[in-house]
Image (cartoon, rainbow, N blue to C red; front, side, top):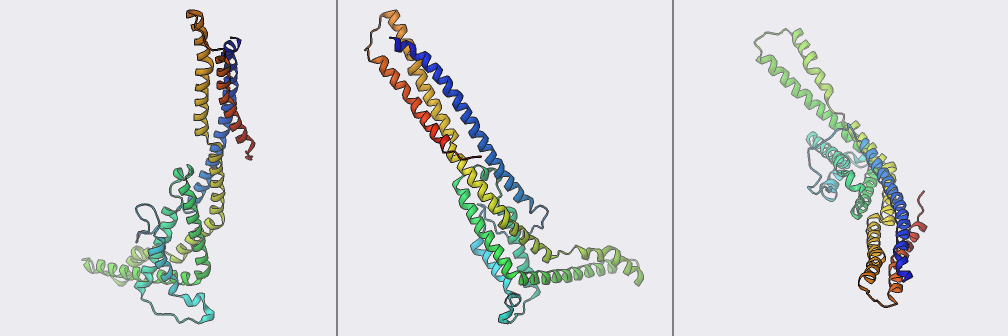
Length: 328
């Protein structure tokens, strides 16, 4: 009888202690989760800041509807073709003969390369911060894929930078000449369609004031390409290592604390103890008084042991979690 009467008080005290302990644990776990998530988001935000304001090309689409990069197909094809035009500059010791290429081929290949690199940087890399911050196994696989491809592109630039810069400079000249021809044609059409008879001096003034300044708007493909590979180098040597470390820590926090599962477990244990350890003894004692209910003398001991099992299980589980923590 005394055990049955004491159970509600004992469990009330233990539940209070357990609730206070778990609240502290949950708060600590949530703080660690937020810290790791914020570090991850900061790294991703920093990664995005490196390509703000860079030139974007969309002549060709290298990104599929699912967001994956066409690396093995058109991506590798344009990388191979771009380095082939001036490969004699990369392998001078082999004296490789330079093949003649048309200006159109030079221009189209350079634009395809710029489209591939700009879309890789702006659309393929770390395009969804919120989803990546909520760790999923697929994000780790994707990060490994990104790391491999960024490393390959960095090696590609180190091995073929001379030929690629020569290609880009040739493209700039081709674009500049084409722009100049277009402007001259536009200028001549404007002069011929005008009803005014311009002197040569007036024609020169019109050309220098309205048309020649537009020649300066021609893109410098050498600078654009160098900018792309500078970003890739920063990703390879700084962003990817930081992101790999931050994502690993974030993953460890989620797996170690598993706050959602532990909270559900604590609520179930609390409900079990409350029903069997507090309400049941109160009802039994009330029924004994009201209707002289008689039960087995082993019932109080059974309830005492049964309702103590959740404490042991939850506390052992939390003790192991806390003991294995190595966060600073």
